[in-house]
Length: 143
Image 1: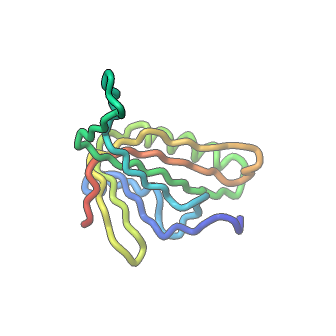
Image 2 (image 1 turned 90 degrees about the vertical axis):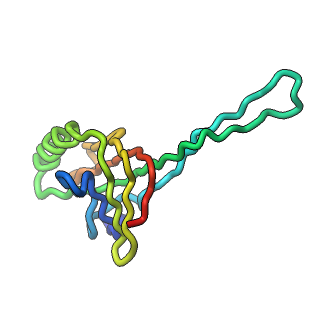
């Protein structure tokens, strides 16, 4: 497991309501989180125009993808953990996502939705369970 990364991030779902820490400081990760910023835009081709025209509709979102590895001492542990965690994440609706950088800044991503959470019980994983979370949200605010 030496190729895994220790988290310097804390990512919390609904920090002012019913907080759920999805990733904490020191957790093992497969890679650093990816944070993208899709812009709602369109490229339109007009009849007899030399080039298409680009339009930005003003909506800017944020997409966050991160992983977490849960360790277990037996082969049953990851299976139980997978099923119980999926019952919790299945109830998540629109909320604020809090992103903290250890020793650094804190941010909120407003109107966040959990797009996908994927556990992997592949045989090569043995006694650990890798999770990949995909979250989409709106406004990113530095707290």
